[in-house]
Length: 505
Ligand SMILES: NC(=O)C1=CN([C@@H]2O[C@H](COP(=O)(O)OP(=O)(O)OC[C@H]3O[C@@H](n4cnc5c(N)ncnc54)[C@H](OP(=O)(O)O)[C@@H]3O)[C@@H](O)[C@H]2O)[C@@H](O)CC1
Ligand SMILES: Nc1ncnc2c1ncn2[C@@H]1O[C@H](COP(=O)(O)OP(=O)(O)O)[C@@H](O)[C@H]1O
Ligand SMILES: [K+]
Image (cartoon, rainbow, N blue to C red; front, side):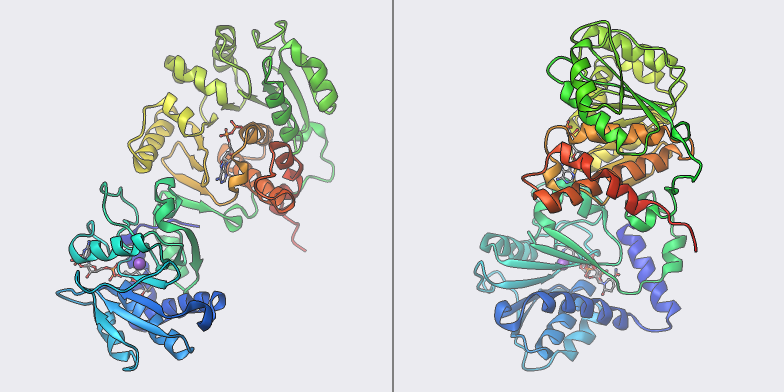
């Protein structure tokens, strides 16, 4: 699914209206009807109480006015508050006129603000994607009043005051919504941690925007859902054998962190790898042979940490990092790996920290290497980010400079590609914020990079999605608090199964 800018969204709106030979108020009616359907399916008139609709001067306000009319028609008690402005959009004006006279309408003013309690249901239709600057004056006062009351706010399209795809000026007033109901495609602002408190839970409602126009628009940003991945993971071949699916090598573990190696190993085995060898310090031998008998253990001569790179010639992909520690000898192993590897690489955790300590090693990264940092690890490779937008700029520059893929982990993990594109993942849950989840991802990605039939991009997209999906499936059984990294590995199979192409009949 594409992520479009505010400007592109406007373009799609207009093209949709043109293609349908209709008018903008028809599209507004559709959007507001979808919004109202969403709301009324969740709140009866009695549960909602008096619904306050705050309407701004543009089409976001227009959406609010249509919703007010529809809610009134459906038996809800509604009161509208309009933001004073020099001019109102045409569709605002049309829908202001269409509002039944019995619906009370008042103008917002600093000395006249609605009375709010924590239980008041407020529809925030002040500003949407047309916001061009931070809120000030009466608009800012209304937003501050709303936030101070902790009312139940449902925002239409955007929480008012929040920019769709640009950094937010510091301390600007932005609505804190419980839900943000947007249309058709996700917006970049929804995916950034710094906006979580404004957006609440977001939901997308289809409103029949023109598919062809969306297809044609160029964007460097995608939201990865099932349709994005359709057809990428082939069914296993009838006569396939272990050689068909690659021989992966994992370099993982050190004394006290052999568990990280076990988790990555299990994950790799549950992600379709043909053969797997684990290189771990001698201290891990018994553990690994017992915990993961399917993997071959190739122990390092050192008892506690990795000191020697094994011969690489048998392997189709190598993953390094989980639990390896940051010993100088291990750094040497990493440097040698970067110099010698002719096969795809996945680097995680301490392998990234070691790279951060010796940045000249970055020049040795083989093209299409996948790095999987969380934001702190990413900073160690680059520089501290001012905010989430700056972090994305750093990500793009890093991927382009080093011609690598970076899986920037988080709630919406962002895969940066060497061509400057971003792919935000849609699966996963907060239960995955627990030690070892990242080790599991390394195992998954190493397995997929060993599949000669997958490109680096497709391996990364499939792996990140399946990892999150496995976390979601596991959480259905364990709950989020009860989720462990081991549980994620147990649901990788079903997650991959869902993504596997079925033969056409
Ligand atoms: N996209 C879709 O699929 C569909 C979109 N639809 C809806 O349309 C919405 C976009 O509508 P929109 O373009 O009229 O913009 P909107 O957010 O109402 O604000 C613009 C007004 O605010 C003003 N203004 C701006 N910043 C300001 C500030 N800081 N302080 C004060 N004023 C400020 C600005 O004036 P100006 O910048 O010219 O001064 C202008 O008057 C979209 O979010 C969705 O809800 C649906 O109806 C149909 C399907
Ligand atoms: N709130 C969340 N929603 C979705 N996924 C999450 C969330 N928190 C963490 N994750 C996922 O869990 C994994 C955590 O990785 P990482 O931070 O490296 O953990 P560890 O080092 O403990 O293994 C990442 O894949 C991340 O995307
Ligand atoms: K809004």
